[in-house]
Length: 277
Image (cartoon, rainbow, N blue to C red; front, top):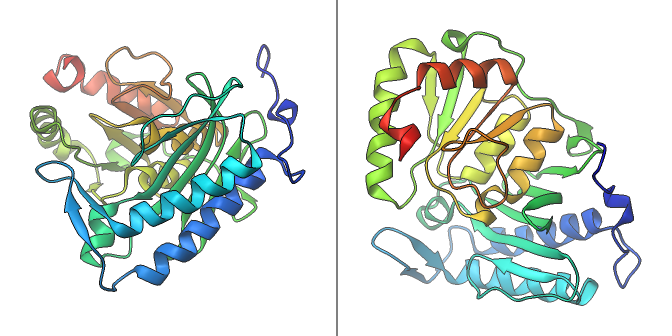
């Protein structure tokens, strides 16, 4: 990729590891901790009307931040359950200690851990780790995307009426209502919808072709950090819902698929309130 430094130019960690290797180790260790607490007696509290956090989220975050902080103390930190920390380098850790916390809290085995490195608004390396299935989705800028070490690609379906689409609902309820209206209108023209409760894992599924297209109305940086890189490195297109430009770490809503399906989806949803909100 011209005009972009390779992630090989990132400094090695204090232990001599690559940034991607540190992402993988952090996510795997956190995943082990999370699985030890899954379907056990956990403490659950509310961050908002329907937004939950558990003591497992907090423990997973502590583990990740302690490890990556020791390996790269110069990097900043942007993590879901903590205040942002500025670093002394251009790079920032972006962390979601459990994406899909509601699933986790309800005993539903569909959640993941996200650990990524960003340079400004661009993600340069990252992983989405599903500890239930022991699936490690990993990518680094300019070097492709993998699932447990094997290359992955986005869906090659070319017609949206043959496609399975995924979406999730965030905590901006007005925007969620508009998304549901659009999805209802589109429903007769697609094969199926899947709402799985973990946007990061759904993005990984779009990157490996398990779902053909994914869209969302409102996401945070830690939800999409690894997923937007996974999808791009797997040959996908990731666009900002509102601007239709290349989505970045700080895009709120997004659309992910191969370029053909993205174009069809954009044409079919042109003029909808969901696109303009």
